Length: 139
Image (cartoon, helix red, strand yellow):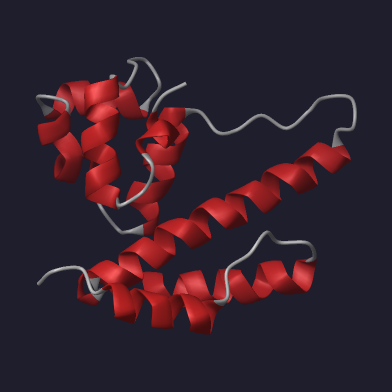
């Protein structure tokens, strides 16, 4: 089924994702994300895209909170392999589900462990697959 922009807009209006500024907003968006994750394989493409956005916003808040706790060190964005691991976990996917992007399961596991870099071509394909910006998968 094709991606329904109108349905996605409705989901965005309901969820109201934004830069998280406090714990209450974090908890609200986390609850929305958890509700979407509970759908498992029944999640729609529009809900998957919303979930990916929520994961990024929630992670950004977590990084900013950690940065406040460690004032001497600025918060760094997650490494591409960390982002890939989080997206797999958020969607209930296994390394085998994305192995075709890396050639085989062994290379996929090396990438997920941070021992292999994600190429720009792989990043582009992963971006399409997860419906997120490809730049999340390369540094």
